[in-house]
Length: 226
Image (cartoon, rainbow, N blue to C red; front, side, top):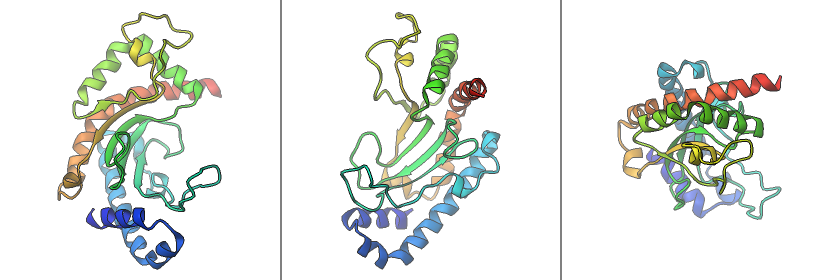
């Protein structure tokens, strides 16, 4: 991953079209390397989560160009790269597994990380997940504990119990979440280790019960929307 890290570190310092155009050959190499890694990730995750089997790299990765239409930041390119491996692909609305490299970010939210779960769910999906928590909170907590290499993200949680659910539930803190993500920061040393793929798959395997439980609620919501 050294080439990937180095490229995005320099792109962060030279985020303009002239620099990018002069380094398109290097970008093609970096993109190809990351695509090959993503292909291996898909195959490896499919061994313990068959719902992602058959996904293509393009189903799980993103364009490097930023959409700047509604952003005050007019930098033309993303300074990170990631792959989101979920049933039916990145735009499906299902919970999945995310691998993210952003070497110049000091944010506690992003930077280099592994993540698994459900990001920005639609309101009907969010309600369905909360129903799952209310009905099967002990099972939800068990899947979180199983992923002991990860931390549950509690950002953007509600201050109060959401409408439709009684306050004082043993799972009140979970019900207040608006996103359901397990996260693990990664060091650059880990990214450069020769066992990165095996390391990533070992960690992601821990999150499979959590992802499966979330997707049970997602499927129910989608069936209700038909």
